[in-house]
Image 1 (cartoon, one colour):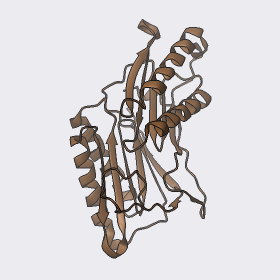
Image 2 (tube, rainbow, N blue to C red):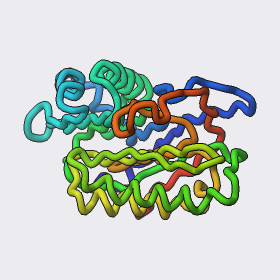
Image 3 (spheres, helix red, strand yellow):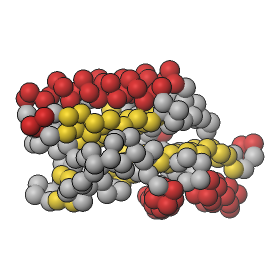
Length: 270
């Protein structure tokens, strides 16, 4: 984990249109974390290593079940990098999201050596410090603060997501989706995923901690998303993911989703 003194530039990109509508599950930029500017990033050796790293992640991530970690360079010039795509995303969309994440990183964090970028479909992390296998606690929740769910569904929805987050660490890819049939109130769709460099125990701890951290803000909302360095989760009243773990003709239809209009960041201070 990177020390808090380098967490100096955090930008969460949240769309704030009160009446705006977008298609369900667009690949939107959901967050960005840059370390302090470092003039050594302009050195040719760093740029070469970074270019090599990004090339490897772009090539290998989509063809490796959406997850790949590697290094570029040697000794003090080594850079560590990791890309993870959401478990339901195709290889093509994974590759496209990876390229988008790199473009944002190089544009908005061009002088940083520790960078994290979150998109709806993928997350990118690279650093000059070793971070593989470390449960990182940075996270943020996005939701529409005025889009409340029916009171009779609130506790059922939260219990449903508790089950989703409990199941995800047990799955082969630490990724799980499920559907809650709320009867006359429709269906609720849930998803949880951990980066596959951390242990299953840390995956469980990460998802449970994130869910409880944001509980008071998200539990009465019809839809929300939590993005983190080591785990993420999604909850909506429309099917936002590919039809991979539900039976045929069950929730196939997609309809426009609501734009996110609020967020709550949880960045630990040490």
